[in-house]
Image (cartoon, rainbow, N blue to C red; front, side, top):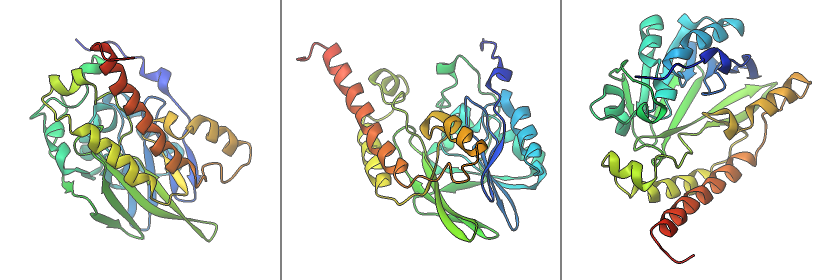
Length: 273
């Protein structure tokens, strides 16, 4: 039985990050909207129980959720694709996700992370577009490039695109998944996943750290300090989310989290301290 979730405690005000880029998510899971000349692109849907808040947030920034044409999912976990099926049914949007996370979407393998959160994922779906490394999807004047970054899940995808703000182009990136909680020995063994995902994760972070990024979007608020940057934005700092160093530093930093995990497991088995 899934635990009762006080989803209203996760509400966060929606806001415009840059000209055509918006935050419309909640505190537990971030969602973003990109406005293009041909409609809206949504980045991650959030939990099922937060759908009402995300839809309301889209309206509150002056946009119409029925204009969503594509829903890009960073990786196949319930906090990022939990309401994907409902959003497609509401808007007709096409769901886009990394090919290797297909089984999580359809429920063929229970990889949604719902059990770990004491939840149930029963809104399975078939994605409309399965991405491979380097694929590009274009809507109007915005093209999104997908970069395969396996590790947190097998099919995690990071997304890169440009946003023009006050006649200047900014390179924006949304990370595919930074957590090492799915790389523990216990988790990998339970779901029959390859321990090679650990080195895939390390390689992914090193690869991403080399990318030039002006605006770093997290799929969780803590990744890019969303609340703090929001406060700066509200105080008048129009470029509060501009930071051309944060992306690289964070990607290199999470490699340390993996190293700590591996060392902790080694010590737990009686390895030398």
